[in-house]
Length: 90
Image (tube, rainbow, N blue to C red; front, side, top):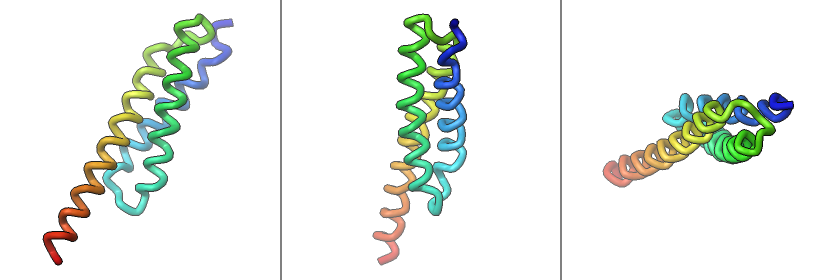
């Protein structure tokens, strides 16, 4: 029953990719942060499931988790850049 928990890695990959794609769009930042955190959580659970033999997509779960981390870091950098831009204008 290796495919029983494969959905965790797939969801992590989708949320991580979505978060990374929208991380530079300021109006979507709250949704991006939620998607990134969920991608990290689902990716970590998917990695654990794959290592225990409950899932067969270890690479997909890892990519999802790392995309979530990248999306979160990029979102924080964009927020800091916007804050610096507003500070320079005022």
